[in-house]
Length: 263
Image (cartoon, rainbow, N blue to C red):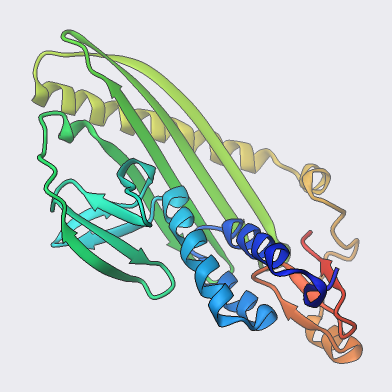
């Protein structure tokens, strides 16, 4: 269905869904491509603010406030698209499209004794034709002598040179740590994270190496070209008069027919 025949509410749903699907680090690219299609600045601004707030929580976008590293996640969300930072005791809005902090206010939350236990770890790495996210989240159930630690390690990769390929892998962890004092608990936790993440990384690399071209072909939406050569998109565009938006994974025909070409 062409976007021009959609109602405003239908456009809002489509825009929101496409922006939420943007891989880590590619939200602004997806937004810019959609702006070329929608051509409604007010509508795009509203949907961009809402989806950008959710994108920050989903991928734990890192920021630096007063020299402190802060991760935006659902753990430090307030109302009205606001986040708060325990270390600086500030609340703020974050404009993902402009990469700016806005409306910064003193929040007044007192740092408690268990603050050092809170940890959400994230890494962004962007390349020319790929990017990825490594995120791990650890939760403590504090008891006098034995602390239960539950964690989740999550990796997402997006490769878009020859194909538009998304990979998501996760692992759940559940361990118990003895509690002697805070220093000992912190060291034990650091060793646990290092051990589990190293095991996870090794397992992921071994699994990817074992994926033959035949296995990869089966998990894709359709077979790769038999010739295994790059498609000359420029020649196709000139021959068929198409407008292509590769970041969104969509091609618009001159007849305004929307087609999904993600492999």
